Length: 214
Image (cartoon, rainbow, N blue to C red; front, side, top):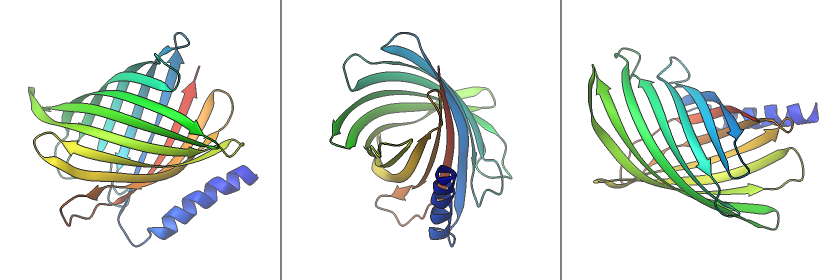
């Protein structure tokens, strides 16, 4: 009961802090399968709902493989299919995204610091005509705190660099992971996309994710 109360407290605290602004919700799940000690793959799906969770804006599914060549290091490659509409009045359009990650993490006492570099590029499918959309380099730094319990709080910052457009966004995030058991985990977090060099205001987004490992 104490653990459930802490999860509820986290959600309520975040909601109260942003009750006066537009909010969104991302919810989904991931299945991870280890093939060997160093090699494995992930399958994931997500639904995204903006504008105070008033409608569904996008569905996405992805498949990726990862490899851990050294302790603390991981390289991975993913394909993501996205079915998205600009708003609830527009038609659905498909997007095809490919991205590649290189990450390295190290523990410093009770803290784990991880740096993840990502390159991603995307194609848009407009009525069967596939064309290049945009590409990004992204660098995310995340800090986890080992609480010696099933709860692991974390904070991160993800910096976006659009190729041909420069740095245009940073995504600060805070959250907590809850290890239900050896195979199942739940993660709750909240983030906001902060535009660089513009006055654009983005919504606050809550994320609820489930992960199964086997």
